[in-house]
Length: 188
Image (spheres, rainbow, N blue to C red):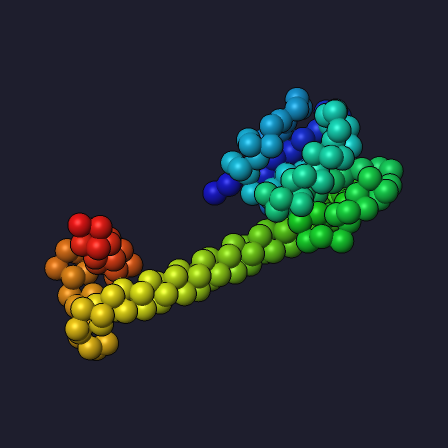
């Protein structure tokens, strides 16, 4: 289970956020010093308190949100959306008023987790669709080569499947091998 990263320097705010995260059994780490964007991949979400001193904190938040690296919850007592004009309406970002922290933070975390899970699910489905599309194109190219060698489309399809089973590889890899073998014949 990934953790939530809490970036803050104000001790009282850290205690309040810790209490809320403990109450909901959310694992978390506290970060008082600056962090590199690359280190964020270990976390599922980041809560940044306005007390966290990072040069260009607004640019940092904007880059994380726009890159869809992970959801960002920004906790502040002074709501000023001007620095966040590019990202204020994006689903990877939310501002939480410090006075409403006890009620809003647990809800925001829950919604962000659901959103992130749904996004991951959609990205996986998208990858599967792209992989199927890629396999289909490769299969057609491979069949075309085999048909040019005198096979019927049905026999070419069976040949690809048989090669995959015999070599204990995927259909994709089987097509690649057949295409590479025929490219070598053309070169020779």
